[in-house]
Image (cartoon, rainbow, N blue to C red; front, top):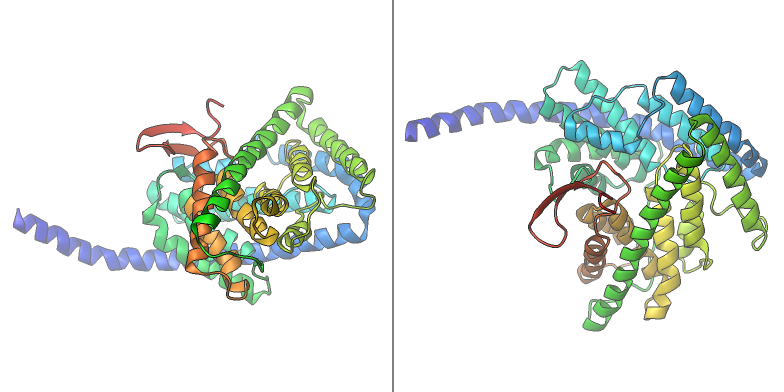
Length: 436
């Protein structure tokens, strides 16, 4: 017995350096590749956003852009593409992602934003990073376990490059696939690829996403009670966000079964919604595109009361029709706008409420509490003029935890597997939104 144990230990000592070196090399390669493509995507994204801001008439191209996206996917044999859901399947079931996914979603997301669709950028970048890493894994003929880790490396590197949040990107890639299970075996390669991807983006001049919060209180029994009240509201908002997103897709599919017609009709709906907003707020395009200006305004304590509702409607109208992008930045928008609006009613600073809303709604719709806590740290800790302390982080942790628990089994991604119950230690093993 002792001899067998010693032999096993010695074998492990000989193998571990090789494994470590292998993942250092693979992680750096994926970080360089995904970081470079993520940087290119960032500049293309902001070029499209700036051009649309200078030429608002581009909104009239929405129906044509939608039809073009649908036709492009049909020509490439990916008419039934499932977006970010397929990245989750690739990690969990080792389904190989086609390399063509990367350029397809790159071009389609840029077209969506150029024409004024309401979507984010993270859905595209997760698919781009996952597709690149999956293809590299195929070229290297990696086994099933290593291929999954490679896909997670691509997710973390691309996410980190685009947002400048390597810790969040690492844990999000490990946490989002199976709720209740962290894939610790992927920690070293994911964190290395995320850091390398971030360095590449910084080298090319991609700015880090960060916000300056004001009015962050100390942790006291009173502020804890205030934050608990906010957390309950954020959990309910997360459920509403998910239901509206999924309802948009179902309605489009029911009335427009042809994907090309569906996308064109979605473009018309977005144009009509923009015109309707003009009736009481002339000249605004706040709900077209990602809406980053509104997020910054909310963090500065300025928001229109209807903003959080309209962003959900615009995003459902865009993504449900088949346009590309993602829901996470719209979730940031929705959470920030709602938190800024409701925080004063509970005696909290609107800027602090906006920050709470961003990370808590993100948690509620993605079911990723650890990534959400790290997101709060990376978005706010370095830019809040010394107000962000360990106790303040405790308030964010409480709000995130309650939002995670009370948002139930809803989620943005239908292929996300809920492995363990949010309310006990029981295994439930079902997909997000199942039984809802």
